Amino acid sequence: MLNADTYITENNGIGGNIRTTYVDFYVEEIPEHLPSGTGPNTWLFIEKIGRNTLDVVLDIAKEMKISRKRMGFAGMKDKSALTRQWLCVSNSEASELEGLEDKLYNVKILEIKQNEKKLRIGQLIGNKFKILIRDTENPEDDVKTANNVLSQIETVGVPNYYGWQRFGKNRPNTHRVGEFLIHNDIKGAVDSYIGNPYKGEKNHIKVARAFYDDGKLEEAYESMPAGMRYEKMMLRELIKQMRKMGELDEKSYIIAIESLPKPLKRMFVHAYQSYLFNRVVSERSKLGINKYIDGDIIIDNQEHLVHEFDVNNINERIEKFEVHPTAPLYGTKVPLATGEVGRLEQEVLDEEGIKLEDFECPKTPKLGSHGLRRALRFKIWEVSAVKTNEGVLTEFSIPKGCYATAVLREIMKEDVY
Image: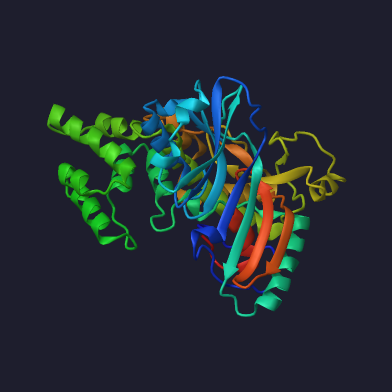
């Protein structure tokens, strides 16, 4: 995991490999509410494989000839996995979705129901995982190790690291785009996203990005495959601006950024916040993940700040997972801890050469962030590990917004994607 160095369990890792096939990594949403069967909005329960949520949502909107804004979902689900989740088409009837599955790639529609309310981001309890770890050296012993680790973290919690999905594994630059934005370098942000070829990318993609870096916008656009839909969205706007004005100015690059879907363009600054958050969690976890350290800021399970508490019994409440120590997702209004923990949080800002007010992003204010305090650890439940003919099969459930790879990292003691 990017910018994450600390483990909280001392067992030797079992190693192995995940995601050998997509079906090795199964995730299913645990929704807050299920659709009632009546109402003006159509909910559809889908199973997808090798697709990310936003791409599927855009494909559905295209096939139905509706605005993307009429589509809703509770959470982004991994591309490199077999996943199940609810989507929503507002102000529609189930009959309008007839034949839709046949037009979608690697997507099955398992259920369609009407509901009174729309589905919005965050309307989840959590996610249930079944993940196969292949190629461990001694599956018999490794199952025991996995269950031991799961038992420990079930008691103390799991470091709440953001996983590689937040940044990109083969092209981990989403946070760098965000870093450019908080420094008000809009051109740098666009250049970083469209150009800037990465070593691990396929050659034809490197060529397309190199065209952009050389200022050959139309060649870059024509050579990019359909899968680079977001780069092409921005390029279309840049090409329009070039034809209109004969040159590109800062406003041109702002228009390019604004052309992206809202969930994606807001992800850039969030990814940079996540990168910094991982560094704080890594350092703060060394002091103890399930105990209060003088200066800690505490939140409850509704993510509300706990302003008043008794230091004599706060650890008991932490052990019961009623409240949690936190780390900052840095932003313009986020409070920082005091004491030893506060010094640690300030050091991360100083190392990056930034201040909280930088997250205002005055040139792209809708992409800025006030920040918030996020729990240092998360709860895990319904845990198990069993030996199968293919390897060690782990099962567990975790809260929304948390990453299964943070759990696997403790079991495998490896950087896990």
